[in-house]
Amino acid sequence: MTVDPVQTNPEHYSVVFENERVRVLEYTDRPGDRTTPHAHPDSVMHTLSAFRRRLHSGDVHRDVDMPAGLTAWLPAQEHSGENIGETETHVLFVELKDGAARAPGTAALGPA
Image: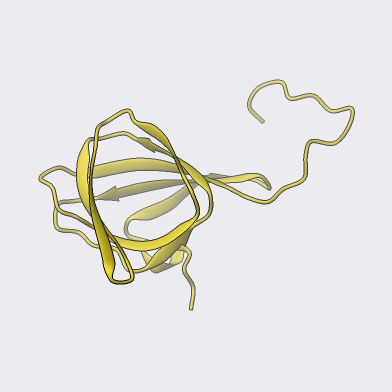
């Protein structure tokens, strides 16, 4: 069974950038929308809208209120969720991949 959110919930998640080190996902939904169980590796989340959501993991749930413009670290996790607010959700997730460090003698000079 796949737990990749792009596969389990393609109507909400899309890949906007990917390389060998990171995958950037865009997530959108509307009030009342739900996701099926899926997993995220260690990630950085940036909220583009304010929203209210209920996250489910097994028999446990947690309600979260997120302001627009919040950037936060998210440890690896598996969950499902639902928009329990009155606004649309718009979020970017930067998922970290296990990757090798930059090769010796190469420089990072801005976006690739």
